[in-house]
Length: 313
Image 1 (cartoon, helix red, strand yellow):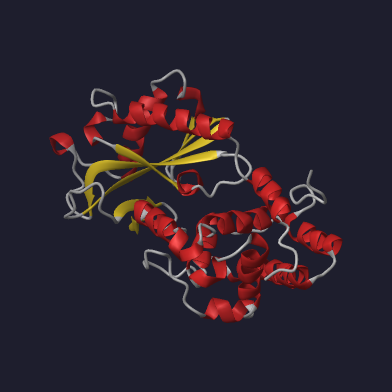
Image 2 (spheres, one colour; image 1 turned 60 degrees about the vertical axis):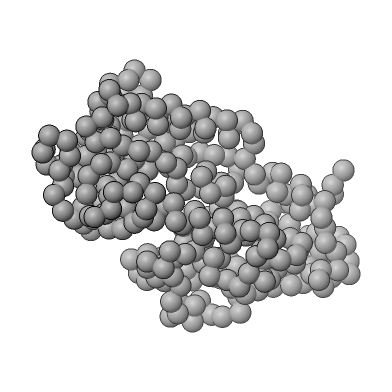
């Protein structure tokens, strides 16, 4: 256990880290507006009967600073692999699906000038100050339950349909964050790792950070921030970057390994691992330091002086 818990300092840090209620309200408002437009059964996308739900950091409560993007999945009433047909027997390829989902946005004066996508886009983007990203997906063949996954999404870079698990991924993160497992510290730990990534300008995808931390033992996340954050950093530093990369780290849904070139390039992982290893040394020193000011300075070096205060009033 840390000599100084610095509870007030960490409380102040998380207040600065977490998005304000204003960002939450804007994100909710924009999502509900676009959801209503796409799901309108008399609207321009009605032939695909899309059902919308959220994925990503806003849905998973892992957003930091601001909510600058809202990720929407639009599940269309099509099946793949299989007939690829919607209402009226019309055939729908990826491009027709995107055009159909984009149609009500392009017809609406609020959005038409802000819609962006091409034939190689992963999603339809709508820039409203807050960025909306709409991912059109279809059912897996044989599935008629919108709550059941995987769904199928098109990867333009590989020109193929692949499985997706947005809802299941979210469910696994929520289960890991349960008080009985990690004391509710799993989601905050993800936020801290994303903060370190941003603070040091590292190239790491949020999804990969979530998968990596999900693979860690629940026991590492228990306790006060001065302890569980040190535990997590030291756990990453306990093995070399290449040793980690040589092991298998599955997504929470178990569908793929994140330590592959196609997922997380080795050099990107090495860079993150190097920064985390230095942070682990500082966190370990902060935990055993009997000098209050020194312990604070160690955490300031890890988390940034603009976020982790020198004093708390």
